[in-house]
Image (cartoon, rainbow over all chains, first blue to last red; front, top):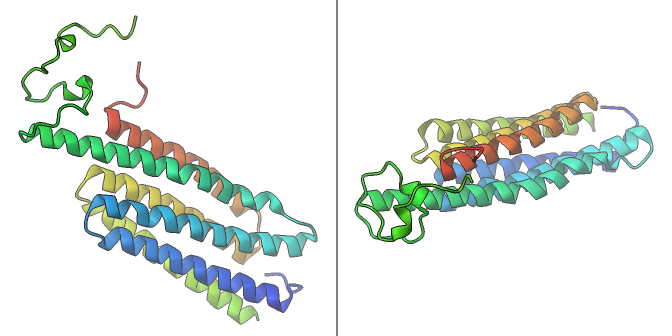
Length: 141
Length: 93
């Protein structure tokens, strides 16, 4: 830590660090303790973004005082994280829903409508009802 | 003032390490496969936060670049594993 940092900047940086640690701990505690996957999903996704934002703002304050200019390059991490975190959450949620549907079908359920035919390959299901499933896969041509 | 700063750094690092330990538990004993991928996602973000905090502590800007690289490649890895869970293969013909 450089000695020429003013008092209020030190206080703000310390406060942001404490808030970031608290939110990261809260998100992982939610991921550890919540009952099912769909509620475990949103806890680290939301809170990790907020704690990364707090850390990045504290880095921005400190780098701006050290380099005597506005160091906006540290906002790149939180910008990228804001874009990518919902994408990961949405893909994981879709994968979990598809896998749960497939498992229900394998246990004798009847919800075959939402599942594409290629996901049923190799399972012990009877053949799908639609006649389009009988023709060979011609998607490559 | 330096004392407050060091205490805050220590608190944040401890919180990140405990959060990473919880993610490791969920990675090891997760009931579903999507739980493990979610735990890996939380783990790389926590590791990136640890690196950014260490960069703040030591006053070096090298940690920030490493954190940015971890952010990019961790996203690619999470998307690849979610796609594998969704389809059974990553790159479709």
